[in-house]
Length: 241
Image 1 (cartoon, rainbow, N blue to C red):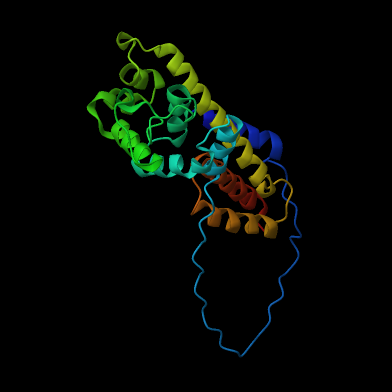
Image 2 (image 1 turned 60 degrees about the vertical axis):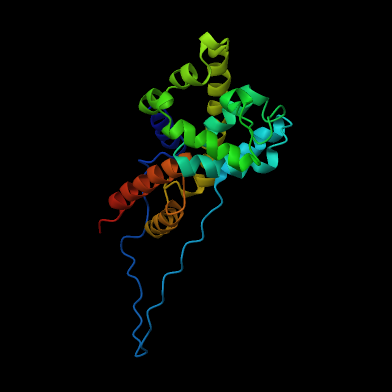
């Protein structure tokens, strides 16, 4: 909820969504008559946009000097496959293997106290993500989404693990990556703010935003949805003749 409010307030501040939409009410669009029969054209299949989270994860890994920098897509893909936040998977590698610098084979997550090794990072990531998504030990985390509840099973204090430090590091990485994603989304989507645009420009905004929504994900998707509603409201205010 706090995140959604932050997104909305930022857009409202930058855009002035309630600004008056100006256009020529008396302008009548020209209508050209034609005897030619036009054939309906098939709508092109939207080309999926690159998932911005891959570049965001790669950027953080590169800053850390991680050997996993070129594998950022693995975190995003295996997280998405199992319904687990990819940023959580990145955060766990931070505390368990210093972002993969001390990985146990393909196991950069300290999974099963590093007793389990995998032939590849992809296999290791799938194992960890699937475990968090399905293992009974993590049912509490799946209910609450709280990193503390995940840590109590993943890094229990009775095993000698520094649970609070684990939580702080993992949550810190997640928050940082979320912030980066939000800033990127705003930079990329600011051009679609309705502001004082005319009716035709707002309609073009809506068409483009709806196309982007089909392949969007994460914070990018949330911002697009808010911008669509903002443009629809602006169009409604300025669309009455």
